[in-house]
Amino acid sequence: MARPPPPTSISTSDPALPTTTSAPKSSSRPAAAGLLAPLAASARSLLASARRSPVTTLAAAFFLLALVMYGEDARTIAELSIDDYLYPDADLYNVSGLPPLALPPPTCDLSRGRWVFDNVSVPAYREKDCTFLTKQITCLANGRPDDMWQYWRWQPNDCALPTFDARRFMEAMRGKRLMFVGDSLNRNQWESLVCLVQPILSKGRKKIVKRGSFNTFYAKEYRATLEFYWAPFLVESNSDNPNFHSIKERIISPERIESHAKNWKDVDYLIFNTYIWWMNNADIKVRRPSSKYWSENDEVPRIEAYGQVFKTWSDWLNDNIDPARTSVFFMTISSPHLSPQNWGNPNGIKCVKETLPYQNYSQPLDLYHDMRLYDLVVNVARSMEKVPVSVIDITKMSDYRKDAHTGLYTFRQGKLLTPKQKEDPEKFADCIHWCLPGVPDVWNQILYTRILSKSSWHSNFSPPPSQSLPVPPQ
Image (tube, rainbow, N blue to C red; front, side, top):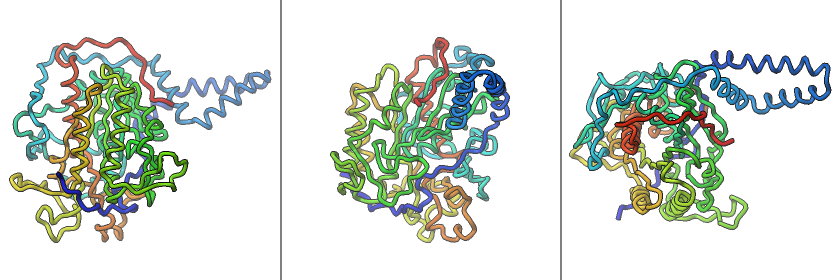
């Protein structure tokens, strides 16, 4: 039986705790403004008519009130609707005319391998070219002096990992919804996926909308969405507000999931994670089932609370997901690098000044993960017969990448770390989130491989019927 690790020293003020930073405005805004001209004309027409009719005056008032109260949502709906009429879908990518995609055999363990230096085929994109990245993870723009972390390719021991082909992937996504659900590390992976696909999309035909727990990337030509949904414990908790979750005492309600899960229905690909938020304490505060207040709670051992959550989660999947439509994945532990003595650097401070991966593949590397949680997820997935869950094991490959975190080159509470803060790396270095481009791109390479392995179209593709662009629930 795996031994429980000591609690990870992640304080409420730790930059690893998920924070929300505003994404840079995308290049689609000028085009979006042009698309809103018909709305502006309609507004002017309504106002002119209002002078002549009390009924029209009332309609104009409601119209203007809606724009004020729901400005971003109204603009988005208007843009999507206008796009449907003004712009064609992306041409079908002639997959049948390409060489067959060489997928690894199901018996190949993609999680076991080594990092190979490669400054030719990676990175798949450049940080400066992906304007959708949040400032928290743009390490070069934030002043990181080295860039070596970008030039490592993951090589499985017994097979080849297919290169991410954005057009093949978006054909698989045509008319579909893909959603990451979980904490800021799943958001880290979502941003990576957006950067991997956005180069093939036309200017003005791609945008991100942030609303509540949703971050949604619209790939309008493909009538597809790539989404991130904030639910750090999967079940309900007192940390569910995506903008205000730096709470000293986090409390979960392990039997309550519906307020989150209602947003997961009718999604074609669901990718879950939850781990780092469990690591502050050995015991988890759990709200009593009959209580109406978060203050009425009990402390429960971490593994027990985790098991309760996954019982609720797996029951919900079995009761609500149609496996003929929806594929479910679970990402394992993304490795924090907080104890440099574990990789032979006793004088180091967290991941600070690390510029190369750990490369002693013959020497086990123990980063104090709570492998009981890992094993529980694997066992729950194996037991799921009605709704299969594919576990994507990213833990061992991420263990080696002590060099690839944002470290001192990140934003904290919306601001770049100051020189004074950088002088205290023990407190301020973020050795949990990852620079992009970087390690999450490889996670998405494996997700891409798994999705195409599940699809039949990659060898004999026939275009799907025309569909409207999926829109997340309001």
